[in-house]
Image 1: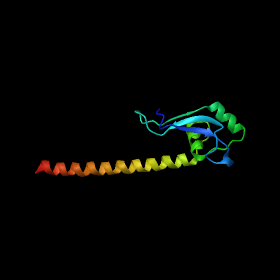
Image 2: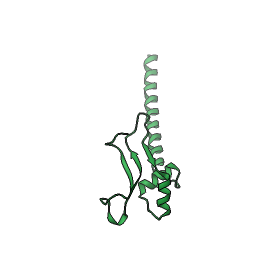
Image 3: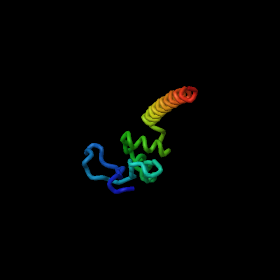
Amino acid sequence: MGALTDHSITLSLWKKGQHQPVIEQIGTYDPIPNENNEKLVSFNFERVRHWLGSGAHLSTPVAELLGIAGLLPVHPRTYMSAWRNRQAAEKVAELEAAKQKASGSTQGAEISS
């Protein structure tokens, strides 16, 4: 993981805003896919459980990541993103099939002439 691409997952006081000192770093996130096309996330689950038990609130992106990691139920936004990705993949597959069919019928006509 590169130092310039890592994002820290931190705990801070919600009322104080984003630019306040961090209480604790509880994980990291690297949004740049590696050579296996994976985006890497790491959490200290012991500390996450501690802070959730103490009443800490999660941002939506962190709740999504913890849902994917299996610590929390999967966030509804994760389901919506997966559905949109499947729809887009189906459209691409349909377009590829149509292109192949069109090029296949053209090649067949050229061969028979």
